[in-house]
Image (cartoon, rainbow, N blue to C red; front, top):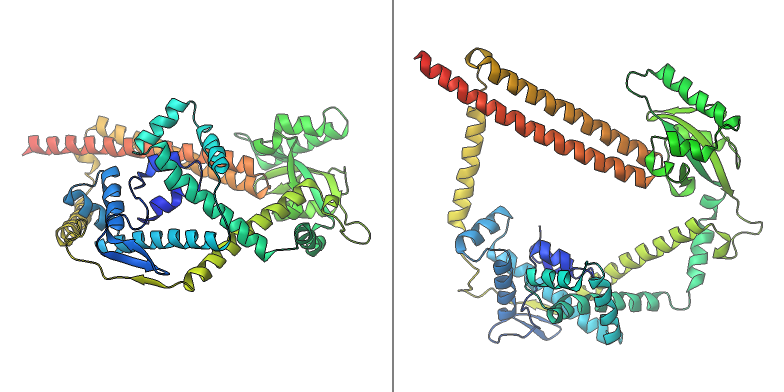
Length: 465
């Protein structure tokens, strides 16, 4: 984890109070560049970054992270791969960027108005249950509303507006024409795109493939006979729970990636057609229906409004992604053209402690852990009591079962993702995480029982001597 990224991460979001609380970012009392007096740490196009500013930043970080003692600070740096020099370098780098954003904003006539700040504060406070909860979050971050505005909201808004100004200059005169041009460039990809819904059936406990196929065909026959609508069948029977809530809809194939068997089945269907037979994939059996087909108008795309809403949203997303990447590229070039001087690190800085004792201690701990691992031997069943051995075996079996459940849920996540339904995939991932947590807990139980067995074994050996 990067040291200075604690602060820069917070600046990426107006609603960053919770992030500040979680990370303990050193946002308090950082002040503007030039705070403190004395030595100059760096200059950016002639503007000074004072050494005291850097030192204060690090001091605030140490305080908010409970690293005030040299021992805690040294252990933290060693554990995270830092030295006092690299910590200073990252903090200076952060302030260099902030100075460059400020300087660029002046060049592009970008300012942050009070109305922008008020709106951002309202959005942030809306994230909390009450104003009291917001104030508690600020206090936990050792911040006030004023410091939050100056250290988070204002810089964030400034960068956002600067990015917009740069993008506007780069695309001046293009506007909607740029979006239309992008749509026209993708017309071949969009032409013939199919939107589909599916019902995914997977094997129930004890059900073999033949029985599953028969069950899928029976449901398809009921749909074709009008006994149940496709949408109701999806809602009631599909194991892809995310799409099931939307009648089985998984969106447009031009914007998604489906498994080969699914995509091949779409190729043979027209609008409102359902597959003649359930389609088998590695995830189960799919009953597929094409709900819409997009054809590029004769004469080509002449207006973005001719596209389905989902295509328009995709183009907007592409524009935003490109704008973000373009701004990053622009800023990198802007920084490369700046005159930046970083002065040597002075001696006697309070955070510049000798890391040798902590590095040596870390190395010894690592060697000790390795030796302990190598020297651990499982006692034989003969030296364990039957009760302890049974407890250890049972806990191990529970761990294995939960691990298998985690793997199955993970496979469900992959299946949902391949089917093109992100919501279902997310849910399956959550299930996988829950099962993995259970597996971890069971593993811990197994370890505890094994430890108890070991202790019992040692006691048994002692009575035999």
